[in-house]
Length: 56
Image (cartoon, rainbow, N blue to C red):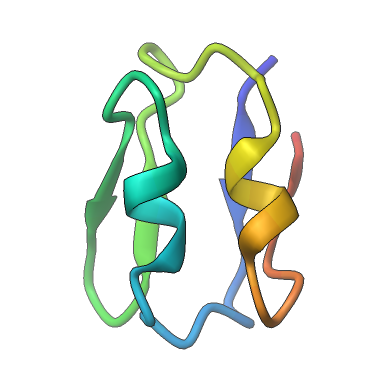
């Protein structure tokens, strides 16, 4: 089960460097997590300053 990024995302990019598999990329106004690549480690959610990332 992949993590997802909600509309609370402010596109700061903090989560990108934390992803060990490179599953996060810049989308339209916010970042997005590729569900096929996400290993559900939660490291991105731990560093998100707005709490926009959660388990799906």
